[in-house]
Each structure stands twice: as C-alpha cells, then as structure tokens.
Length: 230
Image (cartoon, rainbow, N blue to C red; front, side, top):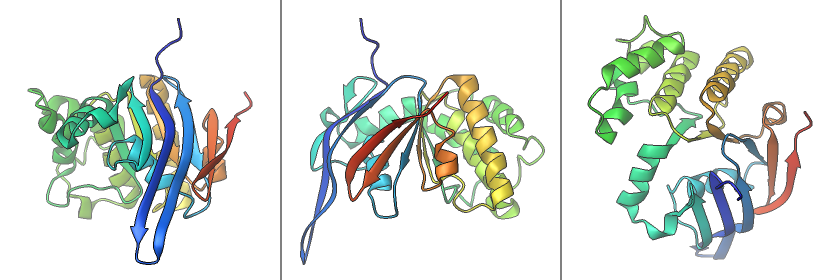
C-alpha cells in the first residue's frame, strides 16, 4: 500500500486579470512530496516560486487545479478551515522574518500556540528559544535583535507547534553570507531531528543542493524535477 503523500499538487494554475489582458503566473503544475522529504523550488525571479508556495500553503487560491495537504484537498475548505490546517500542520519561515514588533521574542514564539488554543504555551516557547540559542534573549523585542537573531526567533516560532510540513521562503535573503549559513545549518538540523517535510523556495543553487530534490520553475511551468545525488 502506497504511503500517503505529505503534499500533492495536481494541474495547478494561477492567472490574474490585468488591464492589458490575462497574466499566467503558474500553468499545469504537477508533483507530490513524500513525508520527511526536503524539496527546493528554484527558478529565476518572477518564475512563480512564491506564488506556488502561497498556493501550497492555502494562503492563496488557484485558478485551476488542486493542492492536497496530508491527503486533504484545500479547495474543500473555507478560509477558516485552511487557517486551522495551517495552525495544526504547517510552519513558515520568511525572508523578512515576519515577527510582530510589539511582542518580545518569547511572546512571538508563544503566539502560534495561543492561536491554536494550547493551554501550555510558555514552557514550549522557552524551550524552543533555548534550542536556537536565544534562551537569554526572551524579553528582547525584534528591534533589539540582529537579523540573524530575528530569524532564529522565526525558526523557533515555526517549529514550536511541531508542524508536519515547513515552508521556507528565501530564509537567508536578508542575511549576510556567514549568518545565512548558520541559519541554514540550524534549519536543516532541526528539520532532520523532527522529521519534518521541508519545502524551500530559493534562488540560491548552493542552498537548493542541500535538499534531496529540486523542482525548477521557468515562466510559471515546472521544467524539471531533479533528484539530488547521495
């Protein structure tokens, strides 16, 4: 019996209507991702990478096609339903960190647990911040943290809910090379430790080669699915 895919994309398309006519952002995208896999989505700027991630995460709706997360079609869910799926199963790491400036590091990490309705939110958040090396910076606000430290908070926030699937969109895009390498080592080690399925959007080929598979987009079409040598 074939194991259920963590994520399936079938005939996915996204088009938007402009004054000048219809713009095709994605067209006929098909692939599946196995549980625990690490997959890089690569391509030039404007190839549709971030749009594809938004559709896979249920942050946007496709013009055609389907996304199934853990076997469940996202099209059968309303906006609240998709939000619940994300809260239960999905973590995010963004290029610009997406921390709330009015909350401390600890409060930012506690937030997804609170939104999910967990009773115990502070202890897991403290433990996760200690895990990423920020156990002494719990009361600091984002403005008091360096870019690398902010991304560590974002990593802690993404993993604290125990997601089955983690989406990372250019996670080192706003960091210098050394800091970026440190964040990537932390991301992959935490991901492997927890057996999370990782989908990484990047234009960085060196980073993409850290994943077991690469899916390459060109002008909104999937042009290659490349297995990494082991």
